[in-house]
Image 1: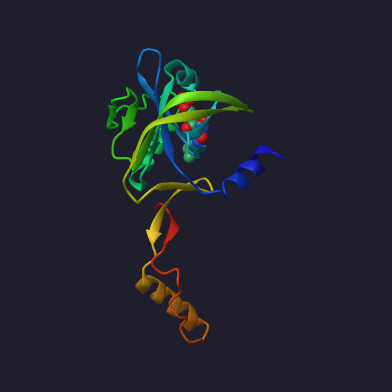
Image 2: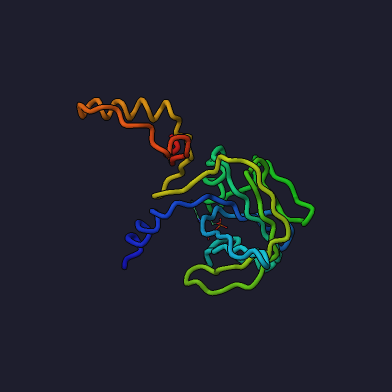
Length: 193
Ligand SMILES: Cc1cc2nc3c(=O)[nH]c(=O)nc-3n(C[C@H](O)[C@H](O)[C@H](O)COP(=O)(O)O)c2cc1C
């Protein structure tokens, strides 16, 4: 299969958006935008991240032996763009702090997972790193999402919004309004404007 087709299909798998932060040999913070992240094991607590072998910060993972997965909120699309751009000073004008474990953490995320770097496995043009979780925290319900090559966000589907739209659709079809569906009050994905 050709790479464009594979990318197209993979884009149909919705993910959150993370910034993987670490430090270079001099202790300077660095990081990349990544959605190839997964929770892996609870006992022991493990996660996995996939890092492009061509990423400028590639060597920093093994050099520092530490990284953090910062879970972006829907208000942080500009941070995702910044950390996906090569050749810029990524931490400039970004609020961050060094954690007690000496790992750079971004401020105002919806959560973070601090890890020591575990074994790396060859994954084609990426390396799959296991992260041994040393500390993690989360609060917030508004994640930034990535789907079909675009940033997206969740929107609450309210009863009244569903009712208005549903009534219009049914009226156009010359039918009686549908009953309120059981999914009212759940979330749906919406493209960021
Ligand atoms: C939504 C999104 C998800 C990405 N996911 C990954 C990923 O999981 N792993 C990876 O190595 N690069 C990923 N990238 C690409 C890197 O963020 C980008 O190439 C970055 O600039 C590499 O960092 P560098 O400046 O250190 O080379 C992603 C980019 C975007 C926009």
